[in-house]
Length: 171
Image (cartoon, rainbow, N blue to C red; front, side, top):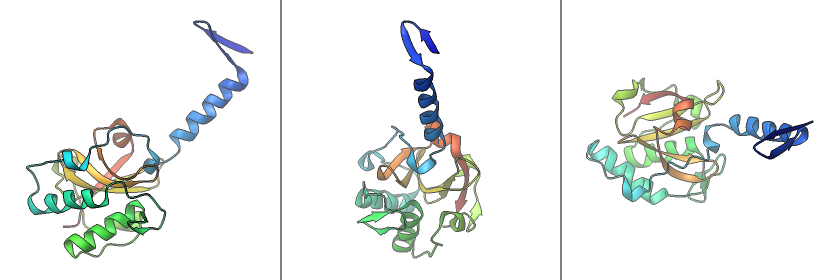
């Protein structure tokens, strides 16, 4: 069977492959986003957040593009919860649990429009919390993407909006 539209023919096997690839992308999880909403660390100048925001923005520059490594906690490679744990210990002398799920249990919940720099933002693609980042202010957050390493993204990006679950205030 061949589907045809505007002189473009797609055979049944090609159509099945397309849908299989689309489903794989959708089920990939938050950390594997192909999001194009990256914000460069030097372009995140903010007037909000005071000393917390300033420390986090400097850390973003220091850790920028550090590669992702599951279980990693160094500049040789780091994962999302490791980045949060390391930065909170180094910048604020706050000990946080190692895993995303355990980090989500600390602090207090924060309503979306009440976020402050340093709040943790959590994402889940299919019912399981799988990704955490640190809100920097001005609608952006710092995180370790499994496909692109440490980076800053906009929370308004449809991908992040679609899998956002909660925010927690630890500081």
